[in-house]
Length: 180
Image 1 (cartoon, rainbow, N blue to C red):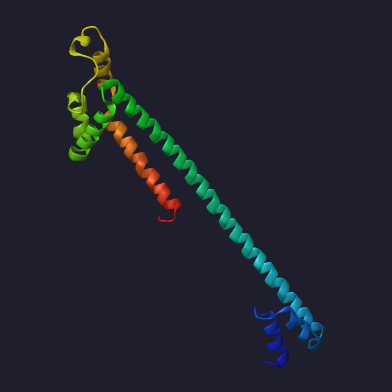
Image 2: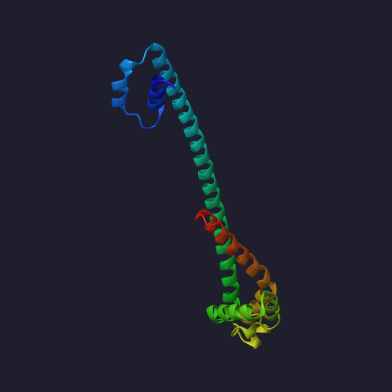
């Protein structure tokens, strides 16, 4: 390699400064300057292409994040709705719905969803005092409404749906935070 070749390589490298160009330009002829000009333009074009690909990747990640946010919000709303339905069921059946929910949750932790569902259907008083009195069954009062709600409620399905939503929310949150 000649001195000119070394000089051109230096000027095209990432260590050359504007002062280096000013100092070494007089040593180069028109063909060398044209070569440097051409290579610099190629470097700029290549950099612009790289930037375009990076921006495309950023747009793809932005789209994915937006999609995760949308999914997260949709699942959160569905869970909120199921939670409200479950709370409404307990409010219609039990005098102390919060205590009954707590007892039901404890029963579920100990025996599982299926057994809790069967207990909920067969003897809901296991979880707390039911609304109304036994005599109100005759007059279709509060106790009748509580029993009808208990029979119509599908605790098993609501809990499974809620748990499935909670797992989805957790997975989306973990993925968005980069823990995939």
